[in-house]
Amino acid sequence: MANYSNIFVNEGLSYPEYRDLIISLLKENRSTSNDNSEEMLHYSKLNIQRMNRIEKTAVLTDFLVEKIKNLKKHYHIMVITEGWCGDAAQIVPLFQKMTEILPEKFDLRFVLRDQNLPLIDAYLTNGARSIPVVLLLDDAGWLVAKWGPRPAAAQAVLNHWKAETADNNLQSEQLHLWYSRDKTQATQEELAMLLLNLP
Image (spheres, rainbow, N blue to C red):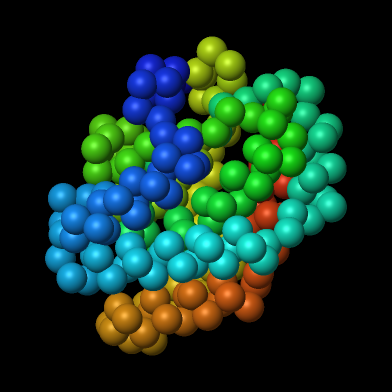
């Protein structure tokens, strides 16, 4: 079993710190990664807009709130992410909402994938460093559950379009169209079930 207390404490960013980092780096024409191409900067700017939208419009479902309230223990949520990642922008604001509604249940921190490659390499998705990956830890930092990088329904959409076309832009467009239509419901359902099965 893995213990991540050092990474959580020493490298983890709060949600406001994570958002501020993306914005401050963009002002210097930089991304959270070492890749500062126009493409990555464009994705980062777009993701700030996506996060803003989710923050304003997403409402936690009664089912998810009930599962949070029923937790018997306190947990650390460590999210492996990057500011340029479109999936992350659609998902990570939900974790902030979860901690805001019942802050006594969770401590939340974000760590950057590309600064923690050994960490993400322990949680590859089909051999890829897909993010976000969410690690739920107990108070001592031991791993108790993992989720990510996207809900199963979103993965099915992406798999379909990867089979249809090699155009990455079209694949991404269709995936984010699904996210827009779903309005975080599938993600919240999976997170609720994750919490339901925690020790």
